Image 1 (cartoon, rainbow, N blue to C red):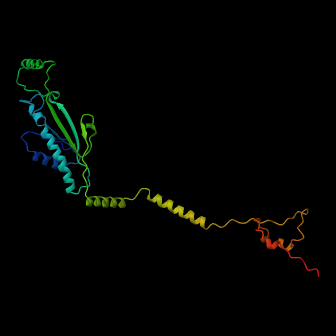
Image 2: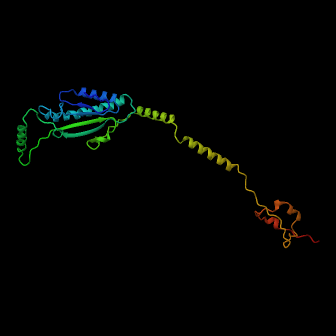
Length: 262
């Protein structure tokens, strides 16, 4: 019995256990714990070095273990749909395949060591072309709600399935996301408001800026260049007649009719 409530939970799959019981236990486990992984395996009940009897049952239960895992993943997706959960992905899966001999499991512990060694040598020599070896495979599958990076090197990884949302579920998800975004102010919202206010202020200043002043020409005071006799001297007192901007030429102003001499 596991006493640690933080580490992985072990679930041994047997040939005489009910698949429904295994699936129900796993689904209740993931509803209760969010961070604990569930390890389903076919290892013997007894620890290494104390196993009695035939170990072939460990290999025969592997297809049953795979069926239980697939049912658990499928039923978990259904629970997410029925409960309108915001979670969109299922369970992460890590598969570890090994042999019992590598873990130290043996056939029996009651036989004499010399007798056991003789049997192993006789069994190895039964091979026609190569030494005959006996290996008993086992399978261990870890299911988790989150990724487990430390298992990435020693196990094969299967990504979780993504559930399909109905139209109503998509509408609820968008509404929930919109509400969350409206409740949480954007970190740059105040800065954007300040920049917009500064731009408006600069635009107003450019709009109400006074027009540029016109440069006026002062009358000539050089004695070597007296004013023209045709020019009215009183006109020099009016600065409006001395704009530096040239005036447009009017051909009617240049025409003067001949004087009547009669």
